[in-house]
Image 1 (cartoon, rainbow, N blue to C red):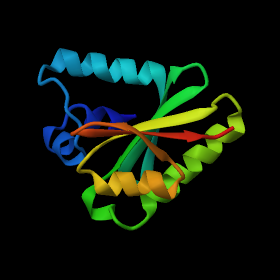
Image 2: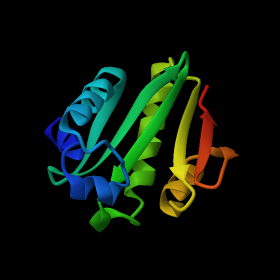
Image 3: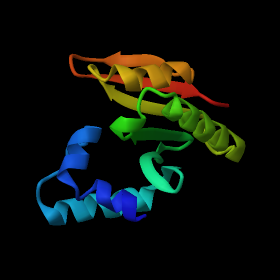
Length: 137
């Protein structure tokens, strides 16, 4: 959990993963607490070193939102595609989730590619974001 907490406190890491949080420490602590209460987190490790994070949150009955990032040195190697594939399989096996959703920035082609390779379909989009979904049951 220390790596997850670091993701909420390290400004350089936040910038690298594209996560925008309030600059106020109390607001960040609140966000971290809310994410811990409502979601599942898994650190992605390589030789016991955290290199990324994948998470899912209940957003509606039977619907979970997925989110993920991988640090720059390990991008473009298929690691996130495989990690998300495993998460999808795990959630499907649990039998409590019918649909997964995700949101990407319009300019985040790598993340879009991960979702496409895992069977997600584009939904509503605007000038800055794309919504994605995947039926898993």
